[in-house]
Amino acid sequence: MFIIGHRGARALGPENTLRALRRGMACADLVEVDLRLTRDGIPVAIHDATLDRTTDGTGPVKGYTLEDLAGLDAGEGETIPTLREVLALVHSDTGLVVELKEPGTEAVIVSVIMDKMPERLFLVSFHPASVAAAKNLLPGAKAGLIYSEETGDPVALARSVQADLILPRWDRVSRELVEEAHAAGLLVVPWLLNTEDDVREELRLGIDGFSSDDPCAARRYLDVAVRQASPGGA
Image (cartoon, rainbow, N blue to C red; front, side):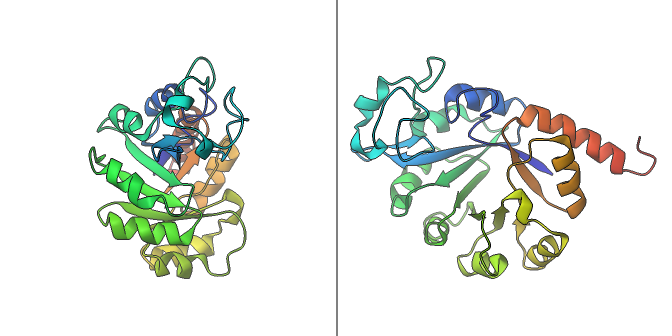
């Protein structure tokens, strides 16, 4: 069972910043960042298409050069990190999950990753075409399909784009889904599990890992749930 620090560890530091990543790395098996491109084609870690929610800037990320973005405050004095900065930070003990936010950016992002390839890497996206492109460009990485709404047959869709895992929203997980995914050779990694009850329930369904805003609290919850589930556990 592995834990992914969502946006680094967004409950412990400004999301998608190096500070949040450092906090997440203290407890998570992998840390996750969202990637978009600047106007000059540099991959940077930011979730939204615009700057307004997470920085003191405004307008679309793609409307600014990297130099422009460097002067913005992403919270608590943090800046928007580049993918290269993220790769330099994440050491071998912690894996990296990269969410591809924008279809068509896969080649640029993979080219940067290949300069400093993490030992454990997941390339994930809500966009099936991005999952397929990522897997084609970097076959050695695990690719994953994220979804939150009903998608018909998520296992079949994931297999059609050569995914290795599915990342359903927590309320889309059932024992039947987990069994079907496992039979197809897919890992099941739901998001977001932020309470002890959520962790205990999803663990009961047979998931392989999960994402959390606070991976340190999640680690405690997981330890308790595993102990209680074991024979003679209290």
